Length: 228
Ligand code: GRF
Image (cartoon, rainbow, N blue to C red):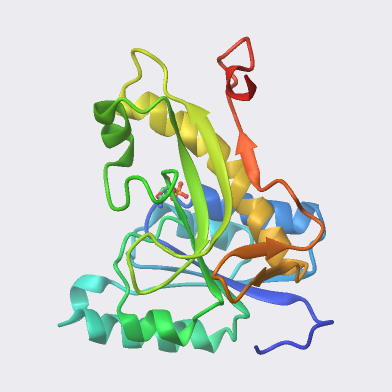
């Protein structure tokens, strides 16, 4: 940890694209006055649209073009060097579309979280919305979890759940899930900022003062079917 318990926690947020989850975290951090600061936003693409937004907010940014590196190890070593420049307490993966090496994950063990668009352990990897529709599940959603060397796996901090409706396309379902992501990810980040998140020896997360870490989100459904 680079900060004492009383100084604001430093977050470095890694993105690859539009960065809407990153924006929600940065906005909530500022507007709600979290004991945290967004130390930097770092992208795996020079043209990641989220970088422009971060710059417009005065957040330090940098970008590494993964195509310039000969190997995954070389990219991750350069990424770690860049991340460490900002001395983060926590690294937040917000749509960071790169598989990270075990060495990188180990470096930030217990200090790196990810948001994945499925109710893990269902549907790790890509194309989660299409998989949810193809499989016929009636509920889908997102998971915020600590990162381990296994892809889309690790102690679960919070989940958001939405219905899968007849006629959904992957795009429609993705938008519904993104809506709940924008609630779950900032909330999980705030819990980290407030120092309330611990992982027990059983590998399960506890959040001090919070008993319910599931967000049910069904705006199109008139009757709250999910609580039946
Ligand atoms: C989100 O759906 C996130 O769950 C996934 O990638 C997407 C990123 O969206 N990992 P954004 O860049 O935060 O808008």
